[in-house]
Image (cartoon, rainbow, N blue to C red; front, side, top):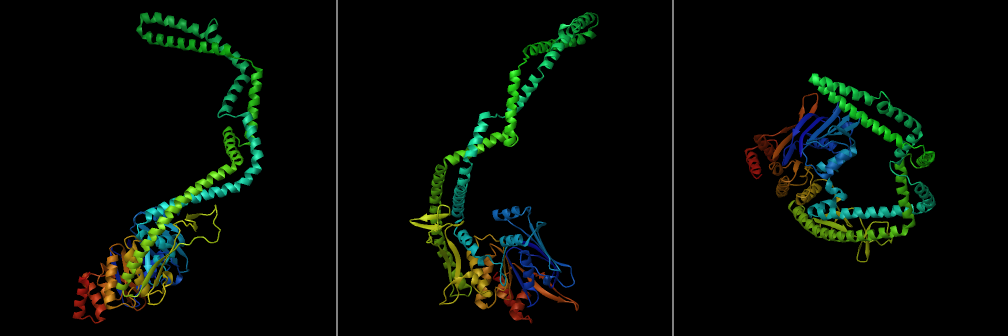
Length: 572
């Protein structure tokens, strides 16, 4: 939903702020007042081409900014995330154009290029009239609209999941075949490397343990001498530490008999005596176990040398050697059992293809049933909107492959004995066709002439597809071209009904449509003798009556016009 809209220095617009409401928002005004200029400014936000011609004369730049109230959905969330734009509610979209024609876009205050703004605009707004920003004219949207209307999103998601899995398997098979020759060439090398690594058989954390043992053996003499000296100092010599502590403890014991204040220190001395005794025992035991083993020393040095050589060749660490061994082991196994791997992968592909084919067939059948319903309902709606001879068709084309090009490395499905190309959303090509005159064959909707007729066609389709489509805002410009009387009322009622599902902004010259507005705005041209400017005002209820009466009666508003306006507004 479009909330505040701010436009500054765009064509005849100097500075306006508009707060559009929910439901049906109607814009009226004299010809040339600037209604289409207002729509053009909104178009800038939708990624349409910027031009310096739109910058108001004698100003620095054009600024158009809008706030959109939005529901979080997967497509919108993905678009923002892909472009590193933070999610914010409401969504802030701004476009600036300088007098030199330079353009800058922002989404939630993050710079965004025109491509991103256009993609965002397609998720927020559908603009109908003399513009190309119309989702129903984009053929790539037709399948989605059909699926949404038919409630087929679940089976489409199931198809896409299986299609993605089949593509993954095809890619894996393609990669496997590409690697086959490379692996054959490297087979001898891998076998040599595996033999070299396995012969030494490096173990995790082995190097640290070897270096510790080597350091101990290389310093065995120092360890023997130092531990022997320490043992004698603490326990064996005439004036050893242990002997001195025993003497000290005995004297403190005597003093404690005289004064209890010495008791604590006597106990501390006893603890020190026990600690020294433990240290002495450790030193004696350690000293007795010291070995002078030149053969073991040489073995350690050789082992570390072998590991060092492997590290230089295979990554610099023991871990990298082990990981390399695992990798080339898998590659060698693959090279020696290549056909088995390909055969197993082909079985997986056939299973995945069978599942995809079943889903594709069900989806295609449901689409055809849905297409019949849509064609009938839109034809009926078009008749109500003054195009009685319209022939609307949803053409679904599902063609089997006749080229013989499908093979194990291309995605396809099999129905019976026929092979069909598989696309990411099914096996069907879907496009909307229409004929508005008796005797003329239906043509692609995208080629129908623009103007009031195309707007009514869009309105009919929107009315039928309203509950399934997720676009929050629909804009109709010149929807009333060539429409009058009974048809105008039908168009107005259709817009009113549609506004229950979408926010709608519509420019009209017809009182039958304007009278049904939930919110009514008038676009006016103001002249002060020096400059001309366009402004937009939201009308009060009384002003609405007079504006609708003006559309009925012309410039001279009559009592009959007032009465007619009130009658039209009561129907809303």
